Image 1 (tube, rainbow, N blue to C red):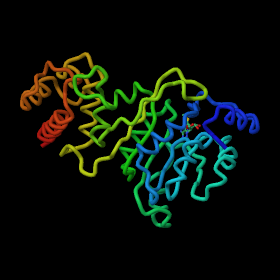
Image 2 (tube, rainbow, N blue to C red; image 1 turned 90 degrees about the vertical axis):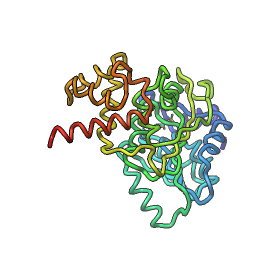
Image 3 (cartoon, rainbow, N blue to C red; image 1 turned 90 degrees about the horizontal axis):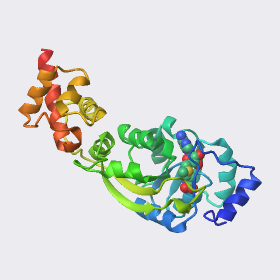
Image 4 (cartoon, rainbow, N blue to C red; image 1 turned 135 degrees about the horizontal axis):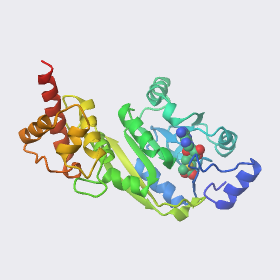
Length: 294
Ligand code: SAM
């Protein structure tokens, strides 16, 4: 069964009386080359565990199952479970879980699989993500410290551009700093909208995120780092002096002193700060607050 063929997809839909859900971001891949790019980008080995987010009708799942030791596919839409039972019936190394990825304890799943001995290699997260929750999915994986060796996922091009952007870039923002704090980011492929059924309005990009074993920054307080980044970008047209002081927590004069101590011009904007500078800023703010409380 060629699951990339639009006529096969239609035939499966007809047989299961399956109406696509726009609100669940159901746009299925119809291009074998894109599947290969995701699989190659993920560097799946034969001892690896693959966690797939949103298998749909199983087109990428089947491709991953050809190589991996085990594939666990997490799909929210219960109507797709009988479809997946059919399309993946020839594989004995695939498990489909009918659950919301945002409410799934991936750490627990991975440690259970490791204990069971179902894989001995790396953990690869893959997926053609439901675009309406791209950022929450990525941030969940990173913030919860899911022990993934790589995360190779397709997303809307504009979101990928933001994630990859560096200081000075127009689309550099809180998500760029957050993801790059946790990971190395590599672009795997550009994917045009024409290769999906139904065709979305936007083009896509596949990125591989490689969580860093050792963090880039020495932070006194990780929470302070993320709140500084959030506050600085909340009003990106304002100067750092204004955005950080209007976020609350510190008086304008304290913000000015912190920035001047670090040699950062208070007139600069968030979009010009490197991740390292955000790290220094967060550490100095933590310092300032600690001193105030003693
Ligand atoms: N992997 C398939 C493909 O590439 O053809 C389908 C990808 S489609 C873009 C996204 C899939 O994620 C859909 O099957 C959708 O039902 C599922 N999905 C949407 N929200 C989800 C959630 N919160 N948790 C798990 N799966 C979800």
